[in-house]
Length: 379
Image 1 (spheres, one colour):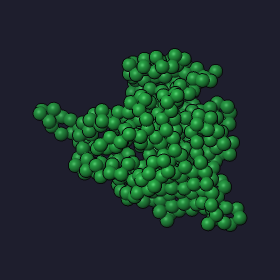
Image 2 (cartoon, rainbow, N blue to C red):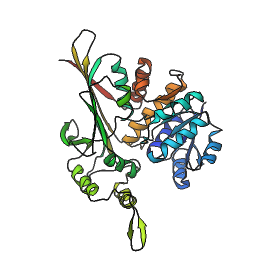
Image 3 (cartoon, rainbow, N blue to C red):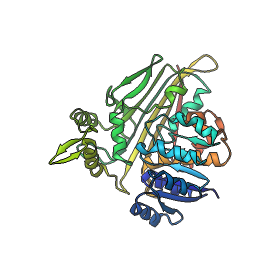
Image 4 (cartoon, helix red, strand yellow):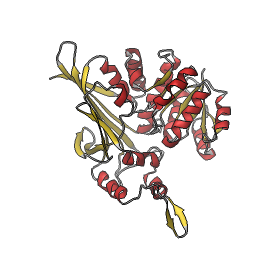
């Protein structure tokens, strides 16, 4: 059995620890003892360990006992955390979705003989894996992902619940969105180009620009049109544009009754309570991936993958934890099974390009009832 350390005991980190503990020895680490004890009460096989990832020396000491690391810390902690893991010579899979460029650590990872697979969630993550596979099959010209996690029961005003840190969600609304149009990288504000889109089982959703392409912008420069947009229930975008334009997401501190406070910290605190997803609260994940390109016969082929997934009452696992976390644990297991052995930093599209890895991940997810449906048409 491989001795695995999972850093981060949030909803997704806990789900990954539970999944990996079926075949491995797993320790779940977090700063919050209360959170760790809650997970331990639910999953007795998982060991727990209090660790502050911001304390580099203590993290380095904790890493020594483990063979493999899964990083599920909040995005603002991700880059420095995986850098410490790589410096310790540990192979890893990461889902922290930090804003920095992971490829800056490629030389370090190679020097340490480490395999680090980053951005390994649903999107970024699974849409990268699918793209990597079809990039080997078609001369792609177009790639688009529409994706969102939503509560089944709408609650005014936001009609949204966050399965992870609210500050990471707010990052989706504030970080400039990049996409590719006619071969050129375009930068727009997030929450722009809002469109209404119809989905089976869900109905009408609104899509908006967000910065989810990440490594694809650089690993797939030959694709002329590339776009990723986030999905929410109609009306959500307008509320958040009001908050954003009114300064509620500003990091510049203001004085309130003699106390300095960041509007972003205040907003995050309010939204943490407003958005808190109950452990057994039903929610869903919806995603549509559309690719277009020329096949080997010279025909223009369009391939569409759809995902609709719901909270699992049997395991009491949220859909976002399932679709994000199980993609990561699939990649952990394919690495441990020896299907990918290259050293360095790898975004998921460089894993999906290998057919054996692509099929492994899809089958792994299918075994956990996370099902992607595919349609292909010749235009």
